[in-house]
Structure formats: structure tokens, C-alpha cells
Length: 508
Ligand code: GAP
Image (cartoon, rainbow, N blue to C red; front, side):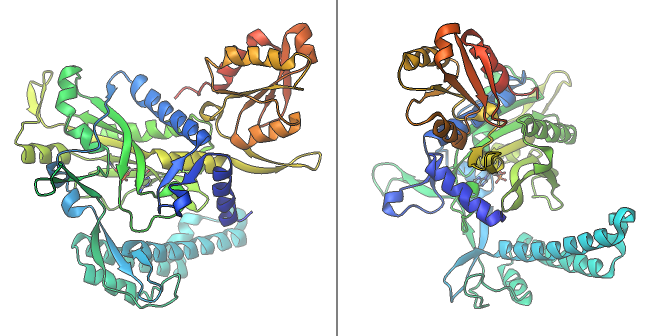
């Protein structure tokens, strides 16, 4: 199945089975805003809880907070968001479509990258076993030409963005002959900067009201609370503060379903370290975060690091963990060594001293910070796009199954009486009433057992427990595994332990 078709089916499935709905659908929707349905909210909670477990509860030197979405407006001045949290936008006058100018250039660069990959694959086929990719990409004339072209474009893009020179970005788009994907024309407006923060007013009378921003990242709530937490929890460096919560960005181009939203949720952790030790901790968190992703059982080839060549002015190292979404490898999580930029700026703008006294060194300093930041909705999409399968079975029938890692599945077990009579529903209800205290379970008695299995497969329930006539005689049930569809007979008193073992994560 083509990836585009796969993605379409996945989004339709997410709606049909109560995972994700378009926000305000009966009013024709609100662009790039989504609601989570009855199964979606369970999956989202499970991902968030697993992140919290790994990043807070399993860490002796990390604690969590929950800062408010509204914050003092000067915070966003200090953090640089008021002046620099911009995207360059450009409109096509014929299609009236709006684009991010840098993304148009990035898409052009991706096409050059594709051409290089095609040359490499062709050569790999031609030379077989003896193929040396490194040698090929450093000597082949065509590849060298593409690489040089790509480097020159990138340099022009970065120079224009760094200098805030929107005229040069427009020139670049014109020189490359980039056309609007909708109208096919080069009839572009000028490029202009657009701030991504949403603003609102606080106060009852409009004259006296002050302008506030909806936070575009949760991180600043951690920075401005760092001393409160350090002192009240008596944390010693190195230590971390974590939080999860909503963030808002007025994205110019919001597409690819829940990949890029205007209201989304982040899971962030700031790790405070001694100046000079930040790169050691950056390397540490890079590995730890990859281990977290792999602990859920999604294969390693779906993830890769993308180390940043071009660093933001406040970072001295940065990498993304990319995931292979149906539309290619894209950023899932960012890990940044942010130096002392944020705390230094808050000290300057607030006029409050934000130094930490390091008793071991007998020194006072502003800590350096390593940040891990992952989008909860993006992780949700990663899990869902890995999980969605259409399978042809041995008997010729088909099934759609979500192979969600069992520990994250919305429903862990379905309790199904084989028939809705002969005392089987009563026995099944007894089991339900025991298991529901430990796991999110569903009881279902309508339709044939086969149809009920299919419905549970479609929402990713890892285990179906069937109560049959034998259960009444010997207190055993069958437990069916979603992925292999194998059934095993076990005694009812062993069910809790059996399910708990199956859904426990591997050690991180
Ligand atoms: N505090 C650092 C920060 O916010 P970021 O790279 O802008 O860094 C971190 O965002 C993560 O948040 C991204 O890796 C992505 O998973 C998620 N994210 C960012 N913008 C998003 C959006 N518009 N919709 C959904 N997720 C988003």
C-alpha cells in the first residue's frame, strides 16, 4: 500500500474507532485543532503516564511540576519569543495559499536529497557486494554536483534567516524556480515574518487589560520556577524538573493530521548541570531518551537521530529523535543543550538573582540546562502509525488490527461471554468486576465472538478473555493474544498476574 493511502486509512480509522476527531466538526471543523475520543484519551493518558514514570518517578534527581498556561508577559520577552518566535510566510497570489517560505526551500532540498539517494541505490545495484557508499558519494560527479548545489542553497537560506533578510529568502525562492504546489505558478508575494504566539487579554475592562500570550512551550514554566523547586525540594545539581501540558502555536502551515497542531501537548524536562558539564549530560540524555522509545517494543529502525549542524544562538548542541511517519522521517523529540541562556535572560529581565550555590565547589553560578522535549500528540501519531495493519488471514478473511504496544493500549483486556445465556454473562461479569480495578477492561456480549474479536483488534486490545461452558465447570477461560491470535487456556485466578506480566514495559 502506498504511504499516502496508508496515512488516509489511518486517519479514517482514528476517527471511526474513537481515537481522534476534528475539533468542532459539526461547525465544519477548526483547522489544525483536534479532539481525542474515548479510545484516544486512554492511549494519550497511557503515553503521558509512561513518560512521567520514566522521567520523574524512576529518577531520584528529577521532580515534576504543573505550571500555569498564563504567565507574566515579560517572560516571553526574556525568552526571545516576542522578538524571534517567527516563521517567514509567503502567499501565492493565484491559489491564495499560504506557505512557510523556509519550508518551500526545505522541500526543494528534500528533492535534491532524493536524487542523491536514487543515484546511490542505482550504484548499489550495479556494484553489488563490492559497493562502497562512502567512496561513491565522495567521488561520483553527479552526486558531488547535487551535494554542492544543496550546500549552496542551505547556506543562502541560513544566512537569510539569521540576518532576518526576507528579501533574500524571496530571491532564493525565485532563483530556484519554486512553484506553488496548487496553482503551479511563481506568482509570489513578498516574504514577511509572522509571530507564532497567540495573544489574549487579562482583566475585565478592555482599557486596563494587559496582553498575555498562550504559552508556546512548557519549558519557560520550569525555568521561572527553578529556584522555588530547588529550594523546597532541596535538589542538588545535577537535577531535573519535568512537566507535561498544553502549548499553543499559530502554525502557518498546519497539516499532516495531528503532526502539526495549533493546540498541542508537550512533555518536557530541563536538567540543570554545572557549567562545562553540559555536553556530557547532553550525550547522556540523548541515549536515555532513545532507550525510552525502544523500551515500548517499536523496532529501532523506525527511529534515528538527526544532529543539528546549524545551532540556535542559545544552544551548543542539539539533536532530534526522528520517527519514520507515513510521510517520512520527521522530528518526534528534541534534545538541546541550552547553555545558561534562559536563566541568564530571566535574571536580567526579572532583576532577581537566579544563581545556585554549589556547596561542593563552594561556588555560585547560573546552571546550564539540557532539555528533552517531546510532543505528546506527535508520539501518539508515531504509535498509531506504527500500529495500524491490514492483514489477510489464513482462512482468506481480512482484519484491521492496531498493534499498539500492550502497555499503551487503551483497553488491556476484553471480557467476552461466548454466548449471552446459560450463566456465561454472569461469570464474565464476575471476572470483569475483579480485573477492572487493575486494568482498563471492556465487557462485550453482542454479536458473534469473531466479530467481537475484530472490534477489539481494531482498537488494539491486546488480550481477549473468553468465558465458555467449560469455564462454569473448571474456572478456566481462554486468553487470546491480539498479534498471534493464539489462544491459551488458564485458570481465572491467574488472569491478573498473566495480564500484568504481558503489559509491563521492558526495563529502560
Ligand atoms: N522547549 C523546546 C521546544 O518547544 P520544539 O522543537 O519547538 O522545542 C518540541 O518543540 C516538540 O514539541 C517537538 O519535537 C514536537 O514533538 C512538539 N511540537 C512542536 N510543535 C508542535 C505542533 N505545532 N504540533 C504538535 N507538536 C508539536
